[in-house]
Image (cartoon, rainbow, N blue to C red):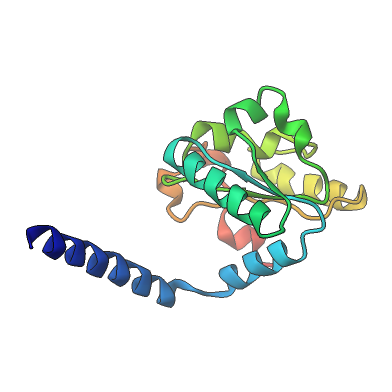
Amino acid sequence: MADRSLARRVLETEAAAILALVDRLDERFDCAVQLLRQCKGRVILTGMGKSGIICRKIAATLTSTGTPALFLHPAEAVHGDLGVIQSDDVVVALSYSGETDELLQLPGAGDGVTSGLAEYIEPLASAGVAAGVDGVFLEVHEEPARARSDAQNALRPARVSA
């Protein structure tokens, strides 16, 4: 009987956690779903540790339901396997902390150009658009003071509000 009681508590806890996610669905969710629906290539999932295990399972599920998908180990990606990503693919990176070194290296490891200096972001983005890129990746942090970056080069929200 104790096992069944424990199982019930676990299921109630998990159900409450899932219900708590309902209020967090917003336009970011809509954008992510639209991006995945419009993907003309493959969905490439990447993550380290337990997040990587989850990514492998998601990639396997997507593949088995007809969506081309694969898992790309982020450490392998930055050591040469990044070339597997094609221009029509969508990359989904999962991280519990958002500060996994191997994932943080990915945006600058591809065909794009990155800058840690705020004054270069606009000219680099404009050059990328002129060259025909599909989008511009701008990494932000919910708590800039905790971000793993050089604070003196941080791009402040007022500078990108236009």
